Length: 567
Ligand SMILES: Nc1ncnc2c1ncn2[C@@H]1O[C@H](COP(=O)(O)OP(=O)(O)O)[C@@H](O)[C@H]1O
Ligand SMILES: [Mg+2]
Ligand SMILES: [Zn+2]
Image (cartoon, rainbow, N blue to C red; front, side, top):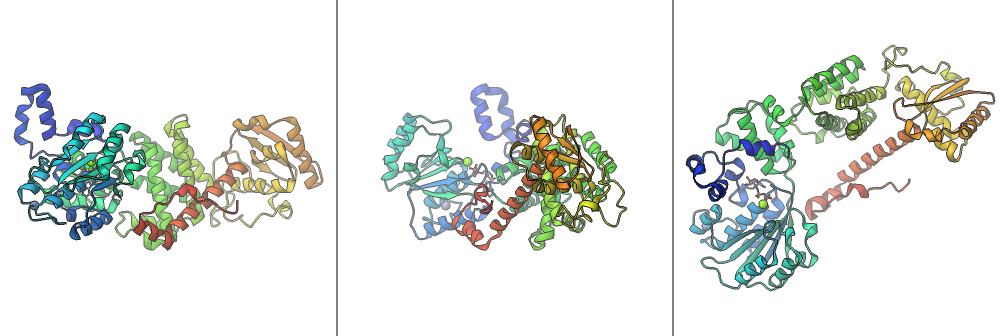
């Protein structure tokens, strides 16, 4: 997370850090100890102390609560999930549940000595080990020998081993026997971000729970609640959503970002400082881009891009956000009821949804994704970004209400002058009223190729060429530089012959090297397949049976395994 380095520098020193510093530098740090509690990081201050305080992870809480209430406890639990979703937190609550002086319970009192000591992390019978820094087998042996002795004080000795996947092979082996038949007074809670690195022999002896990334909405609500209690003024609703999104499902990251936002905004929080801190382009700039696209206003698009450039925002982030908005527009068109009620830009999204067809949005979305992956290859970021915008423009249909002769791009691309004279030969669909001239020529070429009955390399050349101009007298084709090796005389002659045969007269065929829009018939076909794939994934995701499996059985959809059966 790009923000965390700055965060560390800005954050006041924490208790543990002070202790650490004391060992290293003794005296110099001492004065800081006075206000440690006031300046505690939010993530630590707000560690949930009971299952009820947790956000999300209901499936884990339900299972653990039932086990505790029915006294059917397993001896080893494995909690998996990315950083900051509650693994350590749940392990500690479980330790309290097992050792609360009021008895084994799903709602530990939080008041007794055991609960209090566990909360502050110095309970003698709760042994926390960070496997990342203790990978050795000796350490593990020592720890395991200790399991034989009864707890000093408590009902259970609870061993919490964090990042357990980091243990060495021999350490895992040493652990196996104890995991198989642990003494009755011992419970293990293992936690990891990477369960795939854990040997199956260990996995099979643990009861595994997969913690989920926390949904943005829940993170946003949690942050809001914390700010209210902390008495920190917040001037808008969007800031929390922005932080929640940047945290990518991790509550700890969200809270660290919130800490930074508070420092950044000097005690209060508003949208523009949060955007600044996160390096996020203002949404309204992106909406303006889309509105310029609706009006096919190339000049406005370029000046908006210049503005973004001047503000030094990340174009990668801008394209990511643009794709997110296009996704929301697609939702507004296809499943409006699924669009969150409290989306800040809801009206703008719905109004754009009526300006584009669903197909337009699919294509624009694809162009945004491609533009993002091409960004690193572009001459510079601004060029990559504006190229993507121009590609979007090239895809925009000509509005029938506008003057058809008005060119979409201020380009050298000519319109086919005798368009209708050969349409009887090419089975073009009637797309004339919604395709741009450049798109029209491209489509005609794509559809002409099968009629030419080409094979082998000459077919390849045709499919990798993009038409600039088509008429019954002349065809002008562009071959991208990366395929110029296909431009051999014999393949050109075969295409020439096929064209002459098709039109039953001699056609002038001109090849040049270079890119027009990069959308050759091959590229168009790939794009169509991608759109199909995206639709297929969406359809499967929305299938009620699949949803049921995901909800109730913790199933995971592997998008890459979704394949069309009719290739
Ligand atoms: N599910 C959650 N609900 C509320 N806060 C959480 C949750 N998960 C993490 N946090 C916050 O993040 C901090 C770190 O969480 P922790 O449980 O240590 O994460 P990890 O999964 O990395 O072990 C906690 O102190 C708490 O403030
Ligand atoms: Mg942890
Ligand atoms: Zn208690």
